[in-house]
Image (cartoon, rainbow, N blue to C red; front, side, top):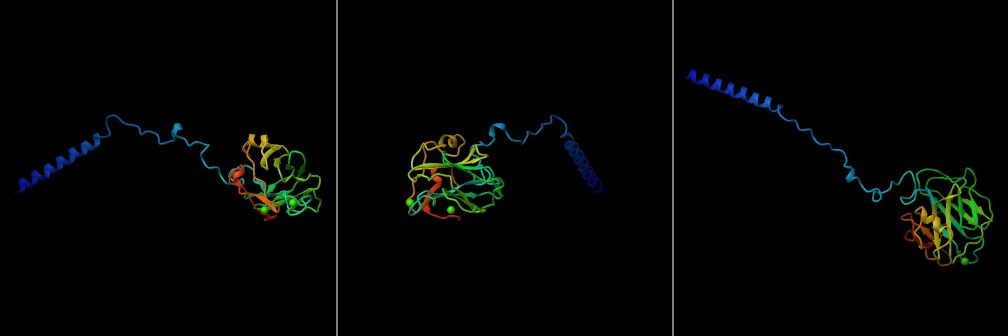
Length: 221
Ligand SMILES: [Ca+2]
Ligand SMILES: [Ca+2]
């Protein structure tokens, strides 16, 4: 019996040693280098379909933090001196509008040096009337009366770059071409004129008429 037990023990030792030998041998032979896990240039996302970041700029569709938010061209009763354009800072940061220009292609209003709009704040530009300006109200007495039937308004950064645009009543209004060139409007597109006493409002969802709707006036809100 002892001899049998010894043989079994020896057999087990041989099996163990040969197994160790097998394991050791697995490191020999051809080594395969794993392929890279990096991005395939042919599979990179299309930049035109990747969503644009919301910050630090304003609306996703506009690179400008400040946009034209509401336009009242036909207030109830006489229009002269009662029209306004409301701008909105949709960004998370204060915006410096010093030197920016609001224009209809004929007349214009230039924001004073150092004029700033707080984050999520609005400023009214009162057309064709004088007053005492403050952080929420600016006055453009030399700005001619806007035509309720048709017209356009553009916001120019540094007095020249179109950063926002809207036209109503008819296509082909002043600065439409410049706005289309920078993707701030669609050629031939326009917002329907609002009823008297009501204004057109911007939702910030697109740079064309689909982002505008007629509603009750909401100056400063
Ligand atoms: Ca009116
Ligand atoms: Ca408003």
